Image (tube, rainbow, N blue to C red):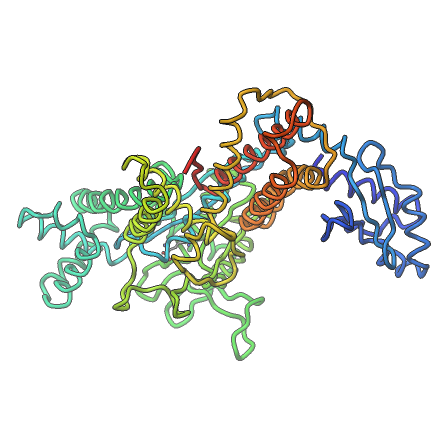
Length: 572
Ligand code: ARG
């Protein structure tokens, strides 16, 4: 059991013994050290429901509360708060167990089959900054879910289908004749732009493009081959970004929109058989009672256009159906821009009604806000264009390289490059992952690359500081006992014991910033501990014990940063 679950259970039992079995215990980490380590705030609510004096009820609860071996002091404060002070010996044993365990002592969960769908760019163009948030938030969630023991399926639902691809294939044929297709494809952005110019200027070209769309949809092998060639090049661009970003998406995780193409007519047919379809102005529409138009009428969601074509929603319905039938998932998480929330809510609703997603399969849209420039507007280049993701990442490395060279001019160029990669990319990722994903945030190089404050460089540096202690401590004994006497030791150990609760919270709400905040808290407590409790200057058991706390701090920081997809360094 996690420390939070354990205390919650004990307080719950005490509430029951005191005559309030239905009241929630409301246990949470204490807001200030004076209040101990945990607070139980449920007594006030319970007293209100029972129409009794809260202080008196709190006394009964405390009398019935069995925290033997866990807490060494339990106090009542204010109108009926219960403050719980953990016993140092209990924290020592927990810390020792966490150090010995590969997974820092976290208990195995009942494994669920969880899909995390993320990144999912459209392949017609190169990845731009708009794909950053999904790629890094999704990757962090996949890592944490996997770490706690779930059976994670990563999915990259790329946009690889639709009319644009006719145009791109037509242009590919044209440039291949001219013999410079490879060269042209090395810059997809320009390739797309040139294709569009040809499409707009030449009626012949436009007709060929339309013809290719029909052939693609009809499964024409020749055209499919060209289309695959284009998709392959585009995916290579994405993989270059994933590699640089340290995001774990590989070719095997790609299952694009095209793969549901053959299912789309079947989907529409099944929706019709279930009586969910209405023909509206030639289009096939599902009307949903629970979504209302401005005139307070049921909202209609198109699944097939008047011309017979299918749309984004139809493909997503196809993907849900596939994910249930073929993959038997328990939980599907869509890490997609919050602006698509209505699309997902409606699409999920259609899938439930049609029986494509049984109740037991949870469908969640994990949205996120906008990344903005210093001007508070969506992030753009100076001239107002979209910023290519790979270029942004190169800039991050260059800026970190300059910082490292200034701080540490004597390092070899290779070392500087390695640090620049970890720090530059880490800074970009952490700036995002440290904020509530639902809020918009301002992308600012100086803040994210600062060595002070809640940043990746600060945490990476904190980690190297801990590691440097071990380079000077040749007597480190990995089996030494932990003995907690000082307040700074106790606070650090109590926070380290919350690792599992933190991960569980990330898994439950899909909020990576809980983990970032936690790691920052640990780094801050470590530096207080480091100042208040000399490690290398102390001796004997005290020294051995403090080294153990330092070792657990390092292990927690390293694991936590790795779960966020951020690299650590041994020195920097
Ligand atoms: N390709 C889409 C875009 O770039 C995002 C896809 C999100 N996933 C989904 N299942 N609809 O906007």
